[in-house]
Length: 308
Image (cartoon, rainbow, N blue to C red):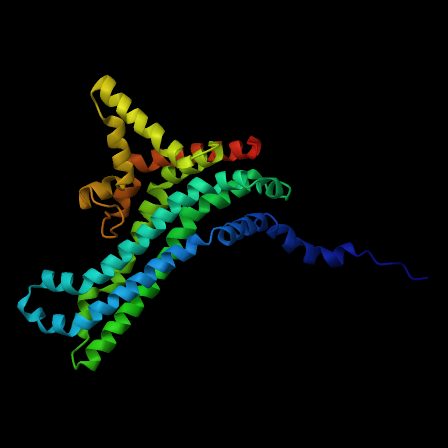
């Protein structure tokens, strides 16, 4: 008489891996959902990259003439003449990613309450914490890395087209490659993205997510008016502007933006100090703590907030 075998030992190995991976699958699909619903996450940087390449066509028409006049310029002027289009491309694509991050964060939790799709998403076995972390990952991780990848491809195409035009004109491409220094520029851009867009701007994006989870109408106004009102109240009541300076310090990229850009738009990738100096900046850790508090509040509001 045959004894039936116990299927547990045979299936144990095949069940262990799915069980181990099940914890990350809700987050993965929640992130996929954000990319599916908000196509501007990748369409806006791609559109700006297309504008950059289209505009670069006019630069290519003047490039042989620029190369012939370089001998009358010093090294700094040569670098500015050849590398400026590449630096401008980086600033425009990063600027597009920064703007998309702001408007995405303001709509991420507000939009699903407005169209009542939150009722469907809450019916799925995905926690509010997982959904909140997935939404926070878009401006803090996905958009900067996506914009960096688009910038790399765009500048490689620009450098390749410039080399083809110079070769067709009988000019050397060595000067172009030496002055552009694409590898150094891209490394500086990546460092800027990690330190400023992913870490320094974290409390800004978390604040926008909190407002998005709370506001019933006009989340942009609710995100802007309270800080503006605090700054005006402090100026009138105490004749000081500490809060306004704090906000300027945060938006300008902290010590990096203040020392390198002197108040200009905080997207230029050249503004960075050493990593050790950045990691010892008190504003970094204070900002990350505030970002964690804002994000925790946004997750809790999502749990109890009703559709609009």
